[in-house]
Image 1 (cartoon, helix red, strand yellow):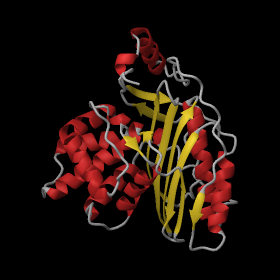
Image 2: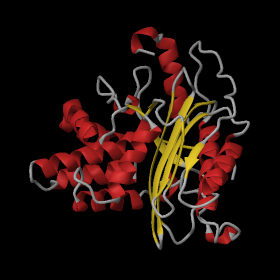
Image 3: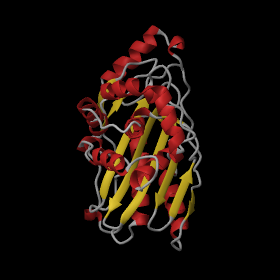
Image 4: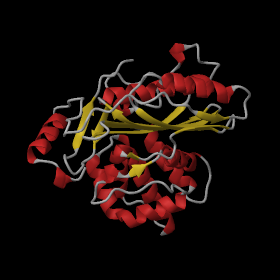
Length: 323
């Protein structure tokens, strides 16, 4: 919905609701989303029986949920891939911050230059604390043309940068977000080894309150690299997303879960974490029964809300999802 079609009263109501941390989106004349049909997940694997198990368990995790969910995952160790609505587009919210940093690192590599101290400070705040102002500064510095050039080089062909400076309205897909994770976690010609190491290092240092989503249920010995985002709008309710790469101690897999049509941000978080727990359990059967050896998400997840035409950015909101 464009800003020109939102009344001043509606703008104010949404702004107040966001600033107060209200979990349900303000309805600006939109009808409630109907419950999504239980989807079927498509999986392939080099390990006997794993594809069928993942498909069954992810589908079960989504049963009865109202979120419209997209899933994409890979596991290099077992040559496993799964997808669900992988090319459907969603508003990115803060998940795009990982792409903004990748664009900056790619552009620096092209021009054979190092990050400045200013860029280091902005990148650190953007990834580890999901700082909106830092993201806006880097987005303006790079410009949409450079972001598009990186997306083309990276093979993220379905991603469309947000216009008018609204980086949180970049249109993304689970497939393209997974593509970014694969580039970050393996040698390639797009991102240098130093660039990959730098970005993954920041994703490992995301503050504890923002380490919800795909890390839920991961083995405790795994190295977690994560970036999340959420955003409420009048249509399709809350968008709640999480991308995560899981490496070290014999692990090498990535999970992307994008959701919309959530009545509250809690609904989106719960959907993502249900999927994540199913994936981690199936990919790590040796620790599946040991609940004390898996990662628990924060009790009060936090994330920033980017600006949209009908409402300003909100620095941080806190959710209290079910365990």
